[in-house]
Length: 401
Image (spheres, rainbow, N blue to C red):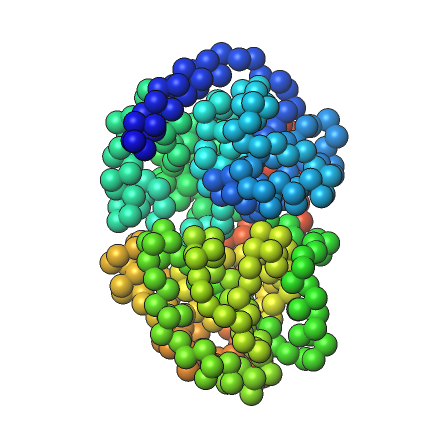
């Protein structure tokens, strides 16, 4: 029954899609979306808010399927529309530009012109191979896309016909390969979400918890593991952790660990908070970790590119590649030599994590030279003008800001 329904919808949307390509576009009407329409965050969000606050000649509209995101955007006084409402279809058909962070499902995929899409991406320079470069997890999906793409473009989410932004020369090369794009389709502007490291005007509900920690001189550590098998794999490094014992050790170090799971795992985990271990929810951060990322003293991560962004804080990073061999075999291959792009200690287990936390508490400047080297390699811009550069590039203005 579900298969029949999908076929019927695809046939109807086939005509909707091709009709939408003939509809005249309205200049300066730009639409935005993120994370399959389920989240308000990432690079799309920061450009959306920048335009709302600085470019009155542009009409920015956010599309979403998520009630929390809808309410949050409304509370900020910005324009938001339900993705698959009548108005959502109409405004998608006439939009001049479309900004996405994951794929065309971020917005109304049945009513957009793919040549008008700007891929903002949902991270920094990828460490793990993505899209057409990923031969482990995406092979079957991409083969299906190739066979259906010419007639049903809305079924594919990875072919880049428009533009993509980049934060470094390294990222530009990767996006060109991963999206089967041409060199001129990649624009080097810096990632908009990194502007938040220099504009300290973000707020979120979790601020009260962080401020309380600071008042008691607690060291704040954020752990951000990447997903396993697109969210279908288990986070074995957490499952095997003795939380009560680890919590006691953190207490003795006067440290609080904040754990932010990947979007794919966030709504399914069953872990509980303890006195010195706190699992960050979407509600805590208004669906966007970048509102608070610069507030943490130390980061722990494994194979996530988030550390390239966190380097802008110049704070220490501990790497936890506990299952690297298994990850490389079953999940993703890497674009780089892992050791060369991870400037910090590599822990083999949670006991070593504690040892390195203690070392960084006593000397935050450990690995400082290595961090600076990698930061400059993967962040060509270290200012608050990434959003400004994106708009200038899209509008064909002078980008030498």
